Image (cartoon, rainbow, N blue to C red; front, top):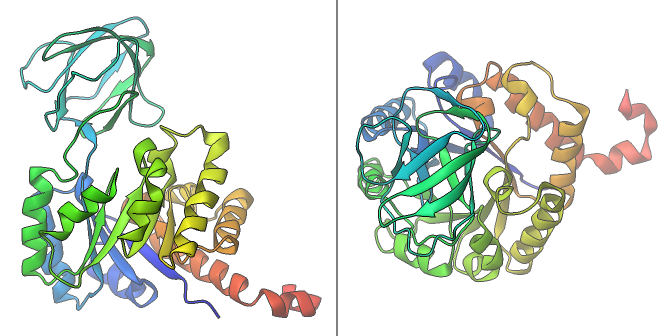
Length: 333
């Protein structure tokens, strides 16, 4: 019987004593996502988890991703002109980006995707400190949303906030760290220099370079996490199942744990039952060799975190006992 981990992202839906105590026995790794936490919130959450005797806490970094800064939610129509800048000035139709990075290698006419199902822009002019864009697909602009520019960007694997978060985590004896947007094995070498010795490093494959360099990344990591959401910004969605299988194959060849994330139980953010497609996706992920399943928004902000965890438990049980079900049809009912 395979020991398959359940990795649960904690947030407002689960950082409550009653809820946490009802689910903690079924969770193998408790994930805190720095993309959605301030340093003050991180300290508060770590104190809360330690008070409730939670171990196996994973600090998940922001990593090498461009994001929007704090801004009032606004809708932009098609053909609207927008400027992108890392210089933080208050001006109409300027999207302020974080962290700072060079625009030198960005190509004209590159597409810019802001969040999922959000704004899509096209770069029409580039200056030293601004990208001038036109909206090609209308949508909302919100704070702290991922910005994916279809050009090669040079970003540090850890933000300044990540480095401070790691120092805080060390004080609470955190020993599991997830590196978001790992692009090369050098990124893993860098984080290894500042985390405690004998820590577990989970490298997240979610970019074009991460996918291309997956073998070297996997080789020096303890585990790999496939974030199918962000990866789908670089790999066409029809190819995501193939990409998943290729990443899993390399992890298995190198005898490293592999975890699958994104949209496992997306429906259950708002409804108390999954779809048949989600159930099939979970089973398929286990069948191809997944060592762990990751719940993100489902347990961080969803309405039914406990039900999500219970469904994963049931799915894992069915997977582990499939020989019994095959031998005796009566066990299906």
